[in-house]
Amino acid sequence: MKNNRYKFLFAAVLISVFLVQCDDDENGNVIFQETCSDGIQNAQEEGIDCGGPACEPCGEFLDLSGIFVQEDQAGRPEINSIFGSDGFRDDFNTTVPSQMGFFYKDRFQSKLLMDINPDYTTNVLAYNPEEFATFLSTDVLWLAETGETSYYDGTNILTGRSLEDDVVDATLLFIFGGADGTENPEFTSDNVPANDKPFSPSFPYLAEPFQE
Amino acid sequence: MKLNTMKRPKLFGTVAALAIAAISVFFISADHLDGPGVSGTSSDIADFYAFQSPDPNNFVFVANLQGILSPGRTTEQAIFDENVLTEFNIDVDNDLLEDFVIQAIPSGDYMYFFGPAAPVQDQNRSQLLSSIARDSVLISSVTDVQIAEVNGKKFFAGPRDDPYFFDLNQFNEVINNEDSEGFDNPGTDRYAGLNVLSIVVEFPKSLLPSGTVGVNPFAPDRPIYNVWVETKRRR
Picture 1 (cartoon, rainbow over the protein chains, first blue to last red):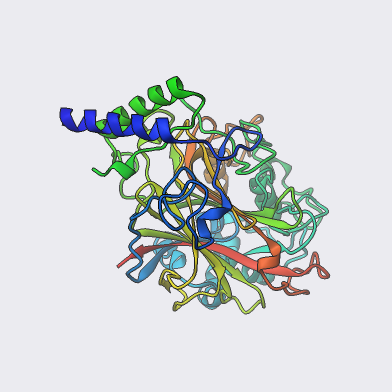
Picture 2: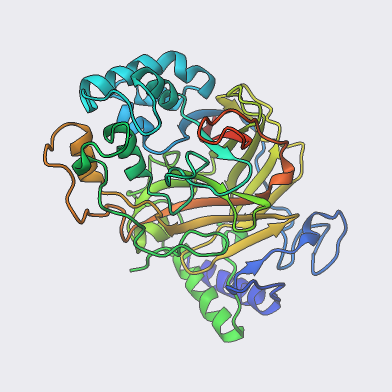
């Protein structure tokens, strides 16, 4: 292991010395070049579209085989955790959206009215219990092709989900807020209005990880 | 252990590079694989985001996996599972069947991406879109951020701050009718100070046909896509 470590160190030194940074964005992050898929050996590539500082290593093996079987899915936030029940959460996660309504609408409606909010009649979306359960049980996120994205800001309604969206308050509002959103005010916000770290204005937008 | 499992250091200068290379070697030698805090949950989706980029010509999709990673060792040792495919699904015509997918699969030091392209699959079973060109990005570490930018698309894979903010404990009590008093004010962000493994893709909207109008009753004139994310394990 010790010898290997020296080999790695030597290799790392070699790589480090010969690496030339190809590009930087304003954050100082390394950006890959576009030459890596043009079918010719150019820039600092060691082979056609491989090697060098910018492209995949030559000879890197990607196993393309296999059938991939579904284990989890997510569309809108907190759907399964709220409306799923023990015994069918796993099944819900492996059900395709086109079949979700058929299998889960009645169970979601029952969960809403029996367990979560027996007083529910309608909400700010003007959904009666059956309409609300229909909406929820097909767990896909609507994403508007154009314009501002917001899960719910009172103006942009269900046009996607951005990092800043307080989806928990929106979900609580839908469940407990009644027709005009004013019912049960103690239940319609968890009073955590924003992330603990500011998001980045540029890609990848999520904040840097916490370090010890 | 292969040479190409090594993280490539970001260069500030030769000295810094040597230092980072040496540190990388130490971490790889110490433990390259998953710690007990992350094993067994490698396909667990923590969260899904889909939004218009600050560049209004682009969409951004985010899948967060293996949620709630403590800073330090747990985050540093968290890895993407090479047998787990993360697949973003896009339904254009509102039949709830995916018309386009973006696939992300890790191998070695890289996350590989296919699409957006039409899927070859039976909905909850997928194959990699091996016949089309793929993109890739070096998987980032906590300190070494790697972004790939190819043909108008951008890719990131690695640890990030968990962007979710949420008083989980109070929420569960309210939803389960165990708390008649309601939420605390201020609430307690269960996700504060914690990390997650993220896959972030930005791509031009022009790679998709137009969405369908009339799907969203609250934005009836705006074309809508149905989007969701799935994780699938290689069999």
